[in-house]
Structures are given as structure tokens and as C-alpha cells.
Image (spheres, rainbow, N blue to C red):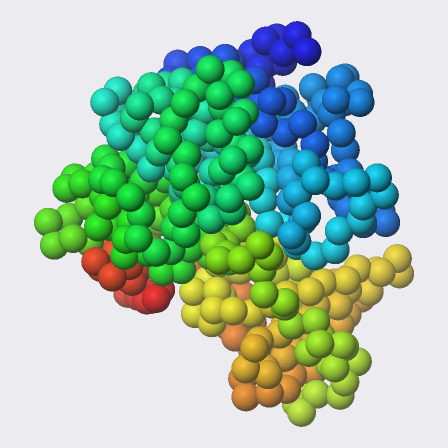
Length: 377
């Protein structure tokens, strides 16, 4: 593939003219890192093989979008004809503009030594190596095939950063001036703070939120920073080939069940996962809620909220109408959501973004903005 013009166009699209990341993006063949990927088709996941259609390969690899490379336990590299994996994505090549934004939050110097958490396809390690030199970059991932494949593809383009198979939630090797995570965590692993040199900088995302936390290492072994006024969504850390099963059984049990409490909601039905500020606030205050949303052709919308403690809520309404809300279990999940939406409506926003973040040496994050405080552990 004559890839250079495509990479240059991508660099122009995802970086500003004086960005120090423009040259690395323009000089990195992203297609090498995603020869095959999964597309979300109408009938489920569909395999795409770039080597069979170079034009489509270039269009996908040099677009600013995420390419899913692994679903459940099946990587696209290993998929045979007709493969149809079920489940959630477990690895991807993140959209380049987000990779660049996360790397921009690092504020690297030319001599910075960087730990890249969640190797994935290897693309972020490639950009770091282009800018800083391969000897200053270490990349880790829990999945041995991902690290093997990424190392091979980095080698193919002449880059040789250290790529290791490591569970990032446990001990990590070495010491670093900067740590950037392309996987979401809650709390921050204490091992990252131990590996961060004094005055070093950490950039990560809180699991199941769009909150980017940036923080500088402090003398007590913790870190202080803020929740950026920026947004990102990443898969959460995992220890196995796939994520644990969700709450599908509970969803089927309560899909049409009469609630222990039935009421009329104040606000319309929304897809909470598409309302990033609301979802982030809800996850901070009540972690672990699973959301499902359905929109029918007649305009009817239904949202389900589920929690492992057995709490559930279902809200249904035609678009624009107040919903009928059914709730059950030990907590009233829809009431929590409406309290957050009311605060958002009355205050014109929520306090999560822009909050001060204090990370203790054990990784617990304490947020504060004005009179609002919360702890993420």
C-alpha cells in the first residue's frame, strides 16, 4: 500500500499544525497494526480483511475511528470464514484523535521515559517511539497475543520499544517519568504510583466513565491533578481473555416485570451511555450500573438500569412524554438518575469535569469542586 499520503491526511485531521504529534502520525503506517478487524453489522460482528481490499483497508485504517480487533476471546487475526463472535469488544485500535489527545495530556519532554498501558494494536507505542525514541518507551498488556502481535508489527516498521505481557493492575516493571493508560481503571493501581518518578505525570480514564484524570506525582507517593474538561471512553481492565458475564439474566427477569414501585418520571427517557456527563456522575456516586436502551420505530423509548445487588429500573415513554417508571430491589436506581439530571438542569451542568483530583498512594481518588466532594475507590 502507498500509505504515506493517507497518513499525512490523517495527521492533518487529528493534530493542529504545530503539534509535536503531527510528524509521528504522518510517519506511522496505521494499517500495519490493523490488517483485520471486526465491523458491527446489522446481523452482528462481521470480519473485515484489509489484505483482500486495499482501498477499503486504507479507508478504514486512516480514518479517525476505532477499529475493533477482538470480540470476546476471538481476535480478528484468528477468525476463520463465517466467524461470528458474540459479546463485548475486548481490544481495539483506538481512534487516532483520542490517542493523540491522551498523549498530549502527558506533556512529555524529549527525554521522558514513558509507560504505555494497554498495548492493544501497538499504535500508541509506535507514536511514542517516533517522538521520543524506542529506548524510552515501554508498553504493557495483559493479553499475550496482543503483545506478541504488536511487537511483531512494530518490528515490521523498524521500531523496537519494550513490549511486555503484564497485568497492569498488579506490579509493573521499571520507573517512568510519564504513565499513560489506554484502558480505564478504578481505582488507580497503586503500582502505577510506585513506578512513577517524583514529579512524574499520570494520565488515565476512570472505568465506566468518560473522565480523564491527569495528575502529578507528589512527595507523599500520591498524585494531585484534575479531571480534564475533555472526554474519553476506554474498555476497562480485565484479567482474563474476556470480561465476566453481564447482567443479562437479570435483564430478562425484569424486562416487563411490574415494579415494586411504579411512578411517573420527571424527565424523558435517555440513553444514559450517550449522555457522558450524566453517566460519569452516576458511576461516581453509584458504581456498577449496567444500562440498556431501546428505541422503537413508533418513537417509544425504553431504558433499563441494572445492578449486581439486584436493584433495577425500567422507564418507558413516547419521545417527549414523561415516562412510566418501574423499580425494584434494594435501591431506586431511576430516582438516583433523576436527582443527577435535576442537579444538571438547575445548575447548568455537573461538577465532575474540572474537579480537583487527589490520588492517594493506594490509588483512591478524591474529587472536589466547590462544595461537592466524592471518593473513587
